[in-house]
Length: 320
Length: 308
Image: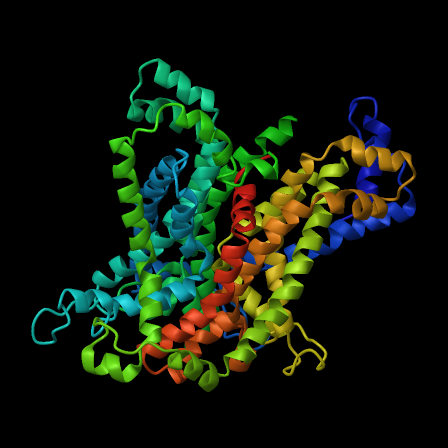
């Protein structure tokens, strides 16, 4: 990170070609350049050392086996970890499948519902503030606490649901929302959707505020009914926020961890990739190569979302 | 995009008069809508209300009548029991020791980067901004395995770390929070700074202000609204963090409250009433911040979603 030199390098050759070459930098004193270097250097070093170096190290470690004791015990094994994960690791495909289900459910249920709520609450109705607070409340609570709170509802013996529907009879109908698949998967997805809805609602409310009110009026004058106006006028103009919503939804479904981990540790059929990675660190058998290989798979899937998002977000600036 | 347009319901009071000119008659559509919203909002609060209800009832009563029954006694005995038995105060204090420096330093360092990136035309600006933004979008689990190993390798003086390593220290948690959260904050603050007219800082430069003076006297004071929003958001996020601490902390005594709850529930919170009380005590600080600073919290989230 050398702010000073990069600026100097621009100057001599290209000054004529680039009218917007940094004028201000030329006036900077040596001390100013030091300050600028420190201001970017310190945060960037933290970011690189603690986020990007580990991300890249994940890739390297995924081709090795390592017991974690001493750096000299790292052994290169090529694609062996990947091969084993794909073929004989029983937890892997269910975890992938569950991450996919998370994504599909979050995208198909709470996201449109959040948009629906936002659309209704944007109509300047009374008590809007109260409704918003209620729907948004779960977003302020940690995933771990959501796991605890929903435990009280799902507990098969004395939770709210089974008490209410008398489905806690060990000799009769007994719905095990915690230990039995796919009930437990449904249970955590309901809890996750409970939270995701509020998040999406707030994002869409912000998006709707920036929609030109004249557009809605114009649609009404043209005789469009509410659905037509929404479908053809409002929704298309929400495109910028839809990009954010899509990115947030995918990342959230890849990151999903806390709720499930607290709810039932990702056992009995609720495992996720994030949980497998964690188990490979703090579980009994610390398999670093394995954990890293799963992390790399997660990284690759994330980049499929992150890269287009960055392109859309920063395209404007490159042109500017 | 300015912060003032972001709070979702600022437009409401202003536009009410024109609306009422349409007539006072109650439209059936609105009644349906209100009924729907009220019922849904109530349903949304059920999990919380159920936890509150459970926490207020003595264990003996729920044992004999079941959890789904009318309460004969409601008191705070579960709260006092949960608080005293588990020593929760200690874990709250850990959270304070982590969150306060983490929030302040994240904001400061992010403001540094955002300032340089937006106010100085340097070749690597876009690259830097992308590095920070992308870093924030990575799932935590992508970096955790090497990070865990890194924390075991980095030595710290024994005054900070009992084990002599970065692993299992509050310091380690502070560092990863700063590194991980600075991506989002840099992105938000750089968008916000673009709305500050360049003439302001240029005038300062003409007057002979140094880089540091331009930042601290001109730019930083103007960032207050964005900083307030981000500080609220970061406090809640860091308070709510569960993942970093359960992996990077091994000694239960070093855990912040959100992560400690898992151990406490196994050890001390032996029935659902105590679990509910412990969960509500833990949720309380976030809920207070949420209700007092909801606008900041919301605009922090939406600032990140809207581009300048």
